[in-house]
Length: 478
Image 1: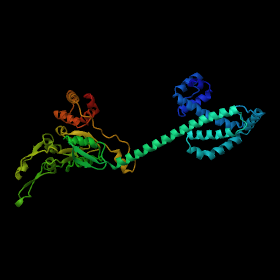
Image 2: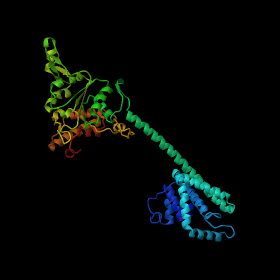
Image 3: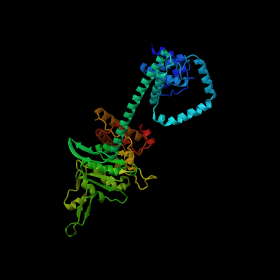
Image 4: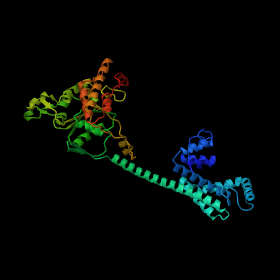
């Protein structure tokens, strides 16, 4: 018998219950008014299309079991849902129903008491478990009923057996679902704990281990590390307390390098960057004392220009040559018999941090200065924000799922060329719109270096335009 033929033999109310089972108890519309179910043929077609044949068969058995159980409990001895085959049965049944109607209020109170007693048990049961229990109880009563005709009893037992089997399958599916949910929860808790405690990162360059870093890392740590290892001057821009300085220190730790920094302010002098002549020699002779910047610059170290946007922009210009040309001149070194040219070590790393994009103070960061465009041109900007995983660990909460930064595959030559052409088009459009923005050859150089370090192309474009207003980006077609 086809599934549609079997469905056609059921009542409309039974068909609606089958549809509800297939749709997890919620059709999402009124089955008596919706055109999909208002007529029986349409309802049969709707159910047949709601699942495969096995699922529909299981739903039919489940509903039949419920109806058999309910009918038997309500009608007492006799054919479930039908007439009592015993002599005088119909009359007795009619009298019983009239008496039930007359005592409806009392029955309601009794039912309410029984329901109250069973609330605790039912709250702990799922619908499938409840269906199974009720069908098994009804089967026991049917089996013990000696007044049922053999054929009626066989039909009832068959319907209940199918309902019990369907309910058992549903209970087993629920059990597996709970186990899977528990497994995923345990994995998530383990991941959250690991994220909160941090991880150990080992850094290899050309198959040679450089260093390692333990503890929690910001989601952008890998990106900054790749850029730094590629020799790109990285400017970290983000709100106060988001971990910029800490991340810079972790980069040095991961690369196995020494670390130094200077905190910018309007009172910082050039000598804090270039070094000083101090009377530390014999007889008070002035000798050259290298700055922390010069030490890290010439010895494969990592140096951080902390609070870069707080420097006097004129003072910061002294570092421009060092940032871009691989070296700079310091006349004071001649007093110590040293070469006046300070050459950058091939592995030195220069990082900067700022709360603004170098456009000057705002209502929040009032102590910031507008930096010279030539200084800003020497940095590759990476925008940072607060780390939700670290914040959750401070509160003792499970770590939220945060997507870690992922490096892109190495670019093709065509991709590099397209990126360069895009930068040139930005320059042309910025000039045509008379924007106060510099898009130099150095922009092409640092963007291609970032792409080859693993930064995705679209992300490189976004980084280049960091700090630009929406109006400026529209004018350059970004």
